[in-house]
Amino acid sequence: MAAETGTPTTLTLKSNDDELFSVAESAAILSVTIRNMVEDGCAGGVIPLDNVDGKTLASVITYMNGISAIPADEEKKKSYRDKFLSDKDFETLADMVLAANYLNMSCLMDAVSAKIAQVMEKKSVGWVRRKFGIENDYTPEEEAAVKEEHKWTFEGVETDDDN
Amino acid sequence: MEATIDRLSDLPDSVLTHILSFLPTKFSVRTSILGQRWRHLWTYVPNLDFDCSDQTIIDEVLSTHKFQSINTFRLSSNSPKRTDPWIISTWINIAIDRNIRKLDLCFFDYTICLPNRLFTCKTLVDLRLDSCGRIPDPGIAVRLPRLKKLHLVYVHYKDGESLANLVSRCPVLEELVIYLDMINYRYYRISSPTIKRLSMKIHPREQEEENHKMEIDTPALVYLHLVDYAARLIKTGPLTSLTEADIYLCNYVVADHYSLYARSVAGFIDGLHNVKCLNLDLSYSKE
Image (cartoon, rainbow over all chains, first blue to last red; front, top):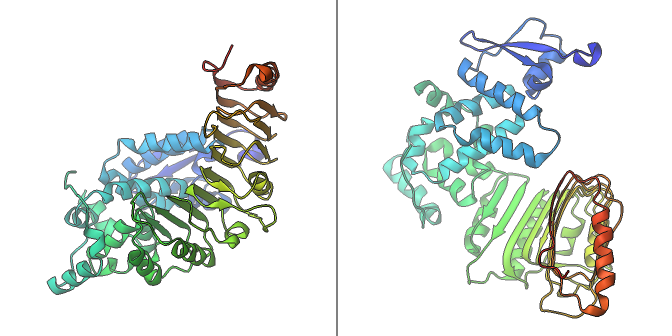
């Protein structure tokens, strides 16, 4: 490991569509999943990440490199995260939250979850159902009852259905 | 992107509630309409965030809320409709009983009574009070062993030592934000070995002639934001860790005290010798 040899260690990560990526160990261990593999000595060759595709993994690695280059200053890290996520569409954010969850990266998970919440807040029920792949399994009577129970949450809310 | 959407619906409840935890409570409750699985999901979200002061709604949400702990409790209201201050105290007590970590109150109502036990809460990490509440006097037991962030924006203080006493009883405090309008402060002293970020905005209620004195003793400080319209004297301890500062000083010091004030400002600026990034505005001060 880096601490023992004094030279930076590079890990090779493999996406589920067989793309290979090199990343500094110091950046990659932001993922608890990867850190555990390194600590267990399973990181000698290629680390397969079965739940992340190449496009998403490339993006996650950009984040890993960017955030680990910032010294311990929470404000600067936060503004990096905001900038990093500012141009991502909903589908990309969805892929990122799945990847962050699988890789166990709490800082990315929080930032992406907050961004998804921000998008959801302004959208209609129909939009959220479509984007999350949620089947409406209420009967019309049940749906009316739930709506009545939480009537206050539908008051004064304006939504749009744009992507 | 159909594949992504299918996988999103497979996300475990813990991830979905995590996403919901970033929404105001009104919107997380609203997701109960999405489908059977979502009906009670919001009740497991550990954060409660209300932008209203409708008592019945908050009472109902608190009673249906299943989560054992409340991480964040945020209440804010701009509405002219007053909430019974005792009810707010009851809600805060419920939050303390559920191991609250972050409390954020913004009310524009100084009749709100903060329960004394809030100031001995062992779980509190982040406390933000805006235009409400009163900081107790040093006679009341105060100790916040885990508090890292403290924001006191135009709050009231029981007496002149309340602020210094509270800060000294927060052994791991890292971030302090204080807006003071000098209602009962002539001498303000911030002393903490742990604070890294300090933001102070101080102005007199009117153009007072009294002798306000500011003393800052924060050796671990890295960032300082200071807007001061009130001090007649500024005194600081060593600021050797300070690397970034935004300072705006404006004064109406009468001629009698001017040279003393000018010397204290010069001494203060002299102490900023390790600062790498400095914004200094003295343009509204006398020459």
